[in-house]
Image: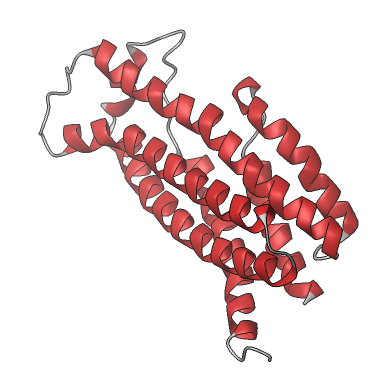
Length: 210
């Protein structure tokens, strides 16, 4: 029996993927991540600038919205994968995507917490620079190490199911397999922006195939 709500869900899934990609890329441009390796004291210099704090606040809002849209896309992906194949791919895609969103938002919160506290005079702008550097470094580790591993699980599950059931164009599914292999090495400089572009392409591809 056909599900009358399914076409609307798929359209929402595609739109959510596009919205996530646009918001994530915008956040990449707005994000202000101080250099805590070569200049740990630079953290407070960055946060002391009101314009930089404004960019960080705007980026935090964009990142929160991006996470919400990615969850909507995950709901559509889970629905599709469950319809064509029961088993690990649907579950891995949902769990990997949900963990990725959680880690992404946690990293964004860590990058925003000190600027927010300084802005509203909850802490002194002369807060311990070592503590500030630790907070930023923790956010960077989450963003470039743990979050990409979770994202790799999402991309791998979608790509495998897409190849088996022709849910995406073969070249896009194979690109996803390569991306899943490279994502755990994001700490070496692999741009997470490519992940956002792939999710947009996958969302559009799933909509076109259906």
